[in-house]
Structure formats: C-alpha cells, structure tokens
Length: 631
Image (cartoon, rainbow, N blue to C red; front, side, top):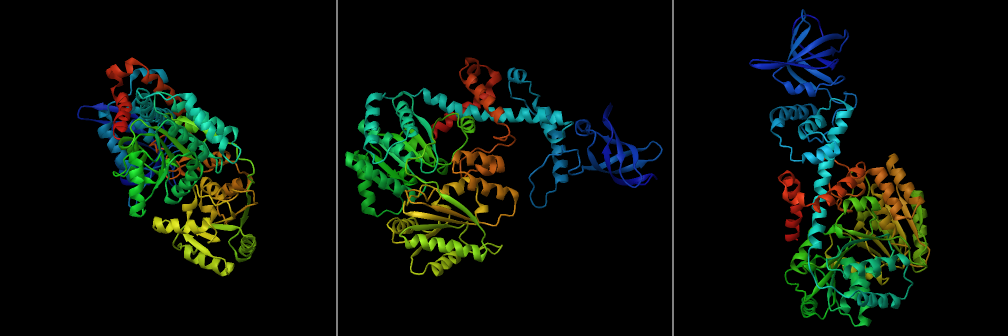
C-alpha cells in the first residue's frame, strides 16, 4: 500500500486485539493491522457499526480491505473487506462450494447472517447438561465455528455442536428401543424355539461353527421375549449368516408363525428361495418366492398360500411389501443387506406385521464399537469363524497393460478348461471419458480370448427376468464366464466359480472389493482373485495392499475407515451410516459413545419427560414415536 491518503486497497494481517467503542448512534471496532506490500505498514482499521467483528478478528487473520486511508492518524476507514482465503494460521473453515460461489463471498454472507440473526438464536440445550459437560452457549458456538478467535475456541465450539447433534441422534434411536420395550406380545416358549432351531442345525450337511451356534442362541433368546427383537447379524463373506436366519425361521414355523425374508435383488432372492426350499421343504415347511416379473399364475398361487398360511417362509424383494401381499400371521422379518431397502422394512412392519421381530443381516462389517455407537437400537451378533473346507482366495494385482492381461486370460482359460467358471467385474456399463472400455467392449475381448467358451453379461439396466435367466445359466454351467457390474457384489453364490477378475480395482472401496472376492472360494477348489489396476494415488495403493495382505473383512473395514473415513468407506449405499452436519463418527467416536450413555440416562429419567427445560431434546425422542407409527 502507498502512504498518501485517499482510497486504498490492500491485504493486511490482524496484529493485535480488536476493541469496540459504542457511541450514541453507532459503534466502531478498531483493530491493529499490518499492511502487506513492499513497505509493510502498521495501521489501525476502523469498522463502523459491526461490533460482532471483535470475535472474528483474531491475531493472525488475513483480510483484504478497501477504504479511505488517513496518513496522519494512520487509520483506514474500512468500507469493504473480505477474509483472505487459506491464510489464517489454519483456522479458516472449509466450505463446500458450488459454481459461481467463492469462499470470500460465502464468508461475507455468513458474517452478515451472524450479525443480523445470531442474537435471535434460542439455545434449547438444557443448562444442566451444559454445566455438566462444560459446553459453551449456542451463540458463541455458532460464531466461533465460523470465525474462531483461537484454536481453543474452535475446539469448544465444535465440541458443543457435535455433542448436541449426536445426542439428538441417539435420543431418536434409543427412543425407538424405549418404545419397543413397551410393546406387549404373546411370549413364545424358549425351549420349544431352541429345540426346533437345534434340530434344523443338526440336519445340515455341514458342520456349524461355534459362532453360528452362538448367534442362533442369541436370536432364539430374543424371539422368546415379550418385546420385539431388533438384532443385527454381522458376518464376513461366506460365514454362514443364511443358516442362522433359516434356523430362526424354522423356530417360528414350529410355533405356527410366518417369516418374511427380504433380499435387495431378484438374483439374491432367488438364491435364498432355492436354499430355503432345499433345507426346509423336507421338514414340511412351505416356501414361497415373490419377486417382480413373476408370471401371473405363480404369483397368484403364492399370494393364496401366504394368506392361507400354507407358506411359512416367504422369500422375495421389495415385492413383499406390495398391497396385495396379505400375511396370515407374520412374526419374523429377516432382511439381507438391510441398508439397501431404505424405508421398505418399516413399511413392511407397519402394513404386514406390526410388532414383528426383525433380524438384519450384513456382510459389510462395521467395527463393533462403531456399530454399538451408531446402532444403539440394535442388539448385535457377530460371526467371525469361517466354515471348514473353505480355502483362502489367492489375490493378485496386475496392470491393465497388454502383456499382464495376456497372463490373466491364460489363467482364465486354464480354469475353464478344467470345468470351472469365472467372473469379471467392471466399474461401469458405458465407456469412460479417460479411455477405459465399456462393458460391451470388455465382453467382446473376453469372447475373442475364450473362443468356444460361452460368455454372459449381467448389469442393472437389464430386466429382473433377464438377470434371472443369465444367473440361472451361470449357476448351472451353461455360461462359463460372466461379465458383470457390481450387481454381483452381494450374496451371489456359484461354488463352481474359481476366478474373479476386477477391472480398475482402484476405483472400488475395500468393502466392495472384499465382497467381490467373496464370490469365489466358495468350495474346496483353489480360487484366485485378480485385481486389474494401475493405481495413481497413495490411498488407492494402500487400499489394494490391504486386500492383498488380508482376508479378514473386519480388519479390512477398519483399514477402509482409516484410509478414507466414514463418509466414503461406509457411504449410504454400503451401510446406511447417517450423515452429520458437524460430527464425524470416526474422529468423534468418544463423543458419540458419551451421547449414547446420556440418551439412555435421560430416557429413564422422569424429569426428562416432564420438565420444560428438556422440551426440545424430548421432541427428538418423540420423533421415534412418529417414525414408529409411520413405519
């Protein structure tokens, strides 16, 4: 900046504490500034009628200011200013922007909004909790989260906002459990339930692991209680969750109740239905399959058997929640990969079996501490042991370049020549802008390389009937190689498949890669998973190294969290983890656990339900009532 008076514009660093003087008709904020330039100059910036700036001008913050400079007093009467981006000693917030919106403009708007409306904010968080946990007030938290005066104040602001956000979340899910415990139902005899389940397990043609036995014991314990079950069964790929689920269904059938078994895709529903018919029909338990695209005669007979109670186990997709489906006495709802249904399960509970027991299956492991903090309304069972006879899948990393791919095709041809089958998974249907091929181009390459072997295609744009036809052909060996999208990620079981080739593997998360690898190695035959990738980032390289080093889905889930954070590793599609405005379920896990404990204490405290001070938090819990009524 130049020293002569007049209009100037420059970048300056706050060099001292701001002071406020209030006079009749207005106020001024004076702050020492160090103007940057060829000749650094100390000046005093004077801001008129903006007293809130005292909290937003910590020492070290950079500003770009415009105004009239007085060289005698060495003051600048600031007419306009913006906070200079990214140069505030690490304390500048990072905002998500859209095209045409700059950080400077957004921060100016936020500052104006705080100036005009912050004093009108009503802090609804009870004073007793603020004192107990030494939390700052809402006014200060909002100001400091956007314009922190210091790192310590930023920490306090974030701590307050995260705790309240997590506590309201926990009150909703704990409130749901609180309501569920108050529901009265007919109590079923524990010994009879366990006897039927144990008899089913004893009849299976394979040895059941101790983890599976323990999971069945926990489920049966829930089924015999007065309040409805709400349990999550986590198990690695191929760990035997379906056997546990069918044991529960057998126990229900023995008591004269029906079970609905929901799967996210027609392919997976068909596999579950075939497994259920194989295991349960010899026991005299009727099984019906309901999926979209069924012929009218099969659907009509299925609906009749469900309504008449002839079918004790009903397997299907979201078709199970259709209005035409009338259960005779539904008592158990099992959902596979439950996060893919959204509100489908709640709708099923409301319309088909109010007060039914719910068992949710998931092959996407979530670390136990995280699961306990996020799913406080669920009891959790875990299967870690793998069935005997399973071999670890050999995992290889190869480049997409021509010579390595020639070796991959030699491997595939060798396996197919021995009567085995192969998967190839691609990240997209259409060609990518970066030159990577489309699904059809990759299929054509495989057809050229495999000669007389038959190649099939499977993706989400196909009708469910077409998908079922392709999978049926692959399952019976009519199709030797299947080129697919990640539609085969969950639950597809073809024991004869021994090769999985994943194109552009660096584009997938660890959870998806582990699931895809689990599509092979489902028999005693040696199997191999080939990761085709040329990773360009350290994160992608670390992710692939983790998959090469381990077959433990729980370990890989931990690594995915460490490498990518909860937002990416467990996005909505994969696990349904909730999105929070301020909190992070990994970074702030201790706060989440504290919020869970406080929520439980509040729900059990009579004062919480009666005193006006808790009215806002109480509404968060009562939202669970509305959710339950609508679900």
